[in-house]
Length: 429
Image (cartoon, rainbow, N blue to C red; front, side, top):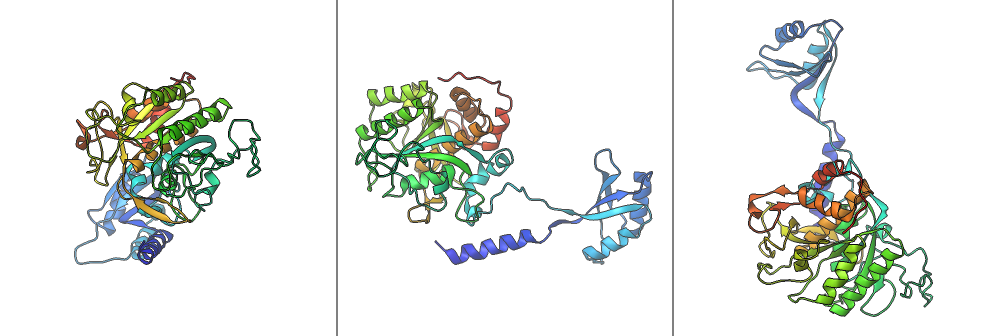
């Protein structure tokens, strides 16, 4: 990465916001009691003809838009001093610019265009997540020691690490940080980077002055590794991971969704039935649509294409910074339901690094992250309500019409607003 450019840009950005910003030529005025708008207007216009004044609410506070006479130039202080001398004004201040305080201070946040696109900063004013919410990442594993992730990696509270025993009697030995189905070992440590990148989109620790921000600043991510160092895995190992997540859910862990940023052009009845069982337990499965630019209505890709039959599966296409369907993204108006950013996505990578990646693999965790954040905002939401919110809160885009069923890209803030109107319901699929 071009670190020098990033640091310079970051410095300029922080410097800009460390100095008070204001809208040039605009001032907030509070008049003395009993002063009418007309009196104020006449007094101000004696100094600055053609200036505009508008009342703010029902108070004695006004917004003044100063018109500087042609050929003259006044500094901010000169204008303030002139206004402060007027007899009817009690206070006058510049019309300062404000910035949402929920925007995180993570070093490279300003390169995460994707989070601004889905209105994450507005959503963070409502919640930044909750570690009581668990999401599963079935992938190449997760770098559990990454300094921007480790605080949000789920730690099995009932397992003693590396003692060679199944302490919690869940059928898996040493599953302290998830499970490794490739080697039938304990924790799901990443040796590829793909899973770590996915996990960072969902839940890189936000506002910790390093790295990036995930959609959830706080969350518990359960990793299960079935893809090897080359990014390949078997259906058997994937089903093992699905079974592992099912076991945890049945033990009472609050797993909301599984991120499935993988797939293949096959159909498995067994896989489909296992995923259906997870749906009955209230777990959404967020699947990537695939990266071959094909219509998956005509050429099914699993598990994405199970969305046609299984109500707990959501299939996700990728969009770019211009809200267009990514050139590589699969699509299908009957199969693919929503889109999310998937081009030039910056996220966590191996050995405390960051990396840009492209793919529907990057789009899917945006939806998984959305599900977790909305659930943290309203715990009572059932899985079918959560899915409904995700699909109904999209930003409809003409660029996606006839490509995906909703015709829209996810909007995190809109999903939050819709959640406020959902009546408490505990029914799952």
